Image (tube, rainbow, N blue to C red; front, side):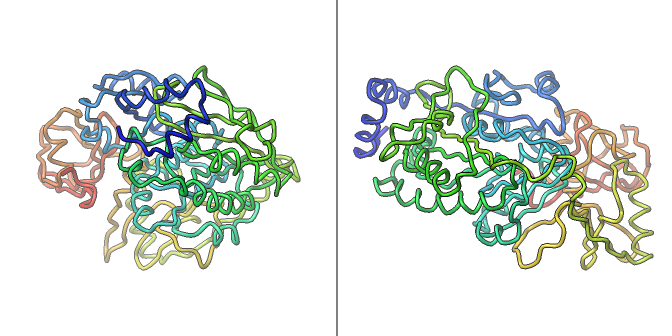
Length: 466
């Protein structure tokens, strides 16, 4: 492929004896990867049921290579939110941020959602995931991916980092910043990125990255962890950004991460005037050493917590208790009696007939542009409740009493995903009429309404299979 001359000269300087091997890597085909949604099933369970040619990505527990002809984006399991399609190296940052259920987590530059969905899966429905993107169109794609994954405890925002930092100072336990960058590590995957690259772009990106990482640092609680990543090779966007954070905020220190034999150390020698020796703890992923594209990763911690973890558990922002009209509550209760998902009705909010289950830890946040606050449950009509697509995706196996369960290879699955009516009079269901949760192998796809053996399609029109 045609690479910019300035880029080639720069890589010769950075790589030295490894340069020829690096250039040969551009002749190799790109790798295709998927990451299992461990909030829905284990990696081992997925291996047993997936009809793909899978090889585990050795440094990501729930990541797999697949072959292009497998076409997993067309498979019903994809629509069930059982995995996310992601370049193998790009899985690394979220895999190295050790998120625990109950924590408050921020993905600051989150679209289209590859890293946010993994962080949300790690939370297991407990705590809070704030996923933000500055682009309105990209934030919409982010929202869809979070909802497909069935993450109930999210706050999806469309803001500049500075606006968020004003409301979330020292709020988060873990923060991931996958910073906008010059994209040098993606040239093989997407040659169009190479065509728009010029030697000034890394410097311009670095300026923006320093602003972003400082805003993120402000939102991290003492004792918390911040993971910074890019998909570029330029030291200006990598080691020098981390060096800048350390010089301005000495309470931060670089942490070791679980390694892998193909990982390379960070390069303090590439920092102007010499870099901090701990920059070696950063990870560089090179395409000539790994079966993946280029990446840079740095894990940092912020000082020490002001109290113990036990202390923090008792200082939670309370959920906003909202009143629901008695008639609406009766309608909602009538539907929820068939749901086995744990729900606290004090955290249910009704806005103009739209019903939401709001994360406990968020509290009241005014003046922020957001696309979703919590789990959208559905809509209250005059005498009924209509559950949402996102509610279906947040349910686990057997959490709704009446299910239409189909094998993934059943031709009716494709018809359902295309929005067609299907006939299910050959199947046994708990309720002979009314709402049904449509599933494949027990994993929810969406809703349908059963009338005399015919299932009226309630699959989200914007999500339909083309």
